[in-house]
Image (cartoon, rainbow, N blue to C red; front, top):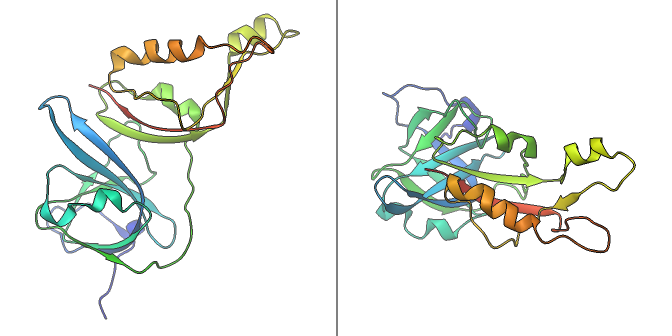
Length: 209
């Protein structure tokens, strides 16, 4: 019987490519290169049966990965894959490493190892710390954001709140447009209670140039 590695066992050694994983495709995000104007490429957030997460990137239209972007939630076996150190900036997982797929990387769908959902949310306070030079970072976040300045200036008055949901029709694809898009969203104020109401959950891909 073949032996498999756990994502938590990964170490950085460029000479080692014989990693073999059984993981769940927890999240799959497309991204584009604004430098070469090419894509889409895909960022896979993987989770092993212990719940340890690591990201894997594909930077080409590899035959073995065609159609895999439609299989979010499925379990797969992956082997012959490169390991790189994760970016020191904002990271989608807590792992210090990430996997890089190549043309020789093998992947196949397998039966689920368990039925865990692996919910994982980032603190919304981490978003402002993202550097504009970061290429792409998918974020799942849940929570309530309020205008702290307005609240402290008038503590007896109502707080201006907005709740972010998953059906807001916009994509933060250019750092120069981010502030404009958010400002436009917040312009729709609820006249009844002076609050910004936008649901309760938001998932998006933040891509900057």
